[in-house]
Length: 191
Image (cartoon, rainbow, N blue to C red):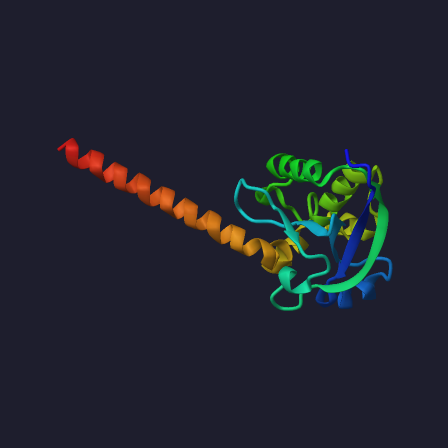
């Protein structure tokens, strides 16, 4: 434990292209991306199709690392509390969360999204979750599962996570090529 308390700050990003319609249905609803800042790093969660972590780190409030086409717009920040955990302890915690509950392939817009991660992470850091209204929209969306299929891919896999996904795809391709090569070698020796 560190003797110095660190602020746990929730950064909230608006999704203007969705919210221009959502707020027409209900002014209490909205689509938001969140990230949690501690020790000057912002931790977020996004989806991809691999077993590896979906948690990624950016510079706080860095919109360009989240989206290539202005999908997100910074809205506000809220101090959730303070933590006495060391930066090393947090790094270990994030690693464990990413290996167990927040892998890229576990991302689901309704059941396990960036806001679910921020809530779980804040609770681990300081014992308090994020404001409940941040994730209210998913309760409504859960009633209409077909809507999830309409969400653009970059809402799920932020730009900061895309390089990690490309690396995973490259490794999978290399593994497949190696397997195919070894299969063809065993076929020629059996002839």
